[in-house]
Image (cartoon, rainbow, N blue to C red; front, side, top):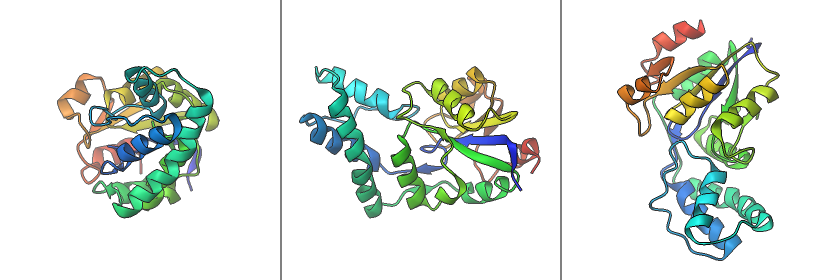
Length: 221
């Protein structure tokens, strides 16, 4: 049985799965619906980003003032658009992820720290068949635009566990873990390779969940 005082928090995109650009096109359509402007998403780097920050960037680039009502409309429209896109092109779950989650969930509680808003996070996890491992505890892209503060929110929602790990694929994830006294686990699935993530000071670096015995030993599972 998972110990309540121990949590592993996971990023989603680039760490657990690859969504094949489904979010990018959903973002553009939702923005058009909410703000009435067709935007170019090709230059947007979602790696380590948060949904709130991407909206703010699009507003700046297009000379638009923030409008809370329109932004709320955007975030209401985004999940069903993402759901429709992913239904056509299901995400790729990285090798070893399901077995990793299955194994650690017997001993650790699992949470999320992701730049996705909560509804979109679970759209992706559901289509990937991974939603069963997560009960919703976490920090999300509709909680805050700053990843370190998102991690702090996740810890508070988890009841401030005595030990917490944060798994992610970017320097932002490593920094968020460090800012909150969490053990950082950097996964080399995304844009950043092992030397880059080691240089950021990650506590543990994993090349693949299929080659993660050193992580299992650290987690004592």
